Image (cartoon, rainbow, N blue to C red):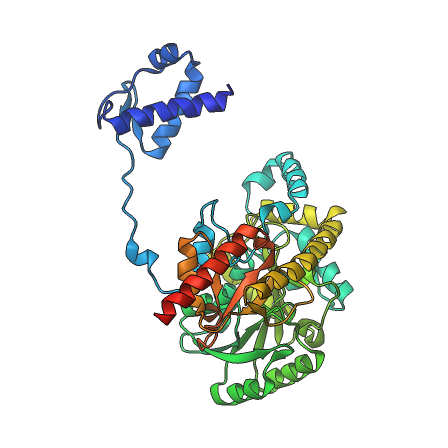
Length: 465
């Protein structure tokens, strides 16, 4: 048996004694030597077990006297009110993040772990373990590691967007990037424009900033420009948040003529556009980008690597004009001193600059092409119709059969071990009750389709009664 397993076995025995009452609060534990002799363990193993239990708050040490039981932490009963909370953006996020291992998650927003470049990440972690102690213990530069910023600047330059490393700020995540921009540019009561439907965490984040949110219908070629212009004139929004490529949740791609007109309107109305480019590497060929057309004049580009590399290694970025980046850097220093972890940026840079990343993404794009076609066909067989078949990415925006409300379906499906993302969580105007977003990489098993079909039948039957 490995030493760590022996330590955990010793800890489990002490916890069991406390749970059974043979060790009550205040009772003295066996001495390290006595416990080690009884169980055939080394004293160092018992010391580690006791130290870890003390760190958990299960026992405590009295110097010169020994270790004494405190008791196991009391677990509060499940709050049914939280379980029955409104199905909103927070509901989907928390259900996705807190789902147990047996939950099927076609409503979540990331790829399965076995689709990610685990071998490359492990190589980068091994290299990190051999790095200088400064990297492992110290703060990073205020704008983030220069090596990754320079890599991103070269990548943007190849796309046609000339950017200096000084125009890039690394952040703790893509969401933090948008949060920093909102902290800087918005005040409570300001108006922000989003697509309808839009990425549901845009809604959650803007709610936290206490701003007014206006939605503009999103078409297969981008936002409805007539309504977009009308909202600009009537509401005078400060920001517009969008995905121009592989739009979340629809998978649509903005048409060039829509992009040009959008930028003209933004310039005329002093509107800042935040272009979330997180799905860029899932495109088979690059489509139009607002940042490229605008040159970072009224457009701010943000992104992260959680969809392509790892959601565990948090790192995002902001690309913008030099004065804006300078002010955002000060804000990040003020709110999270040191910014993004230098260890995270070193890992991200190592994987991105390694020769395997390009091949990894080529393989992912091929797998997703097959998955989109396969899942779309199987969804149609149970009456669920994709709004369009995207040119890339892992989302399908789907219309449900008549008589099936997506929110009711999501609640019912959760009890069947199936996490869904109902349409209204993406909609500012709550007009998407007949839609849901499907992650094709998370909906590949026959079991998932069987559960989905059964849940839709149950909901239809319940709504007819």
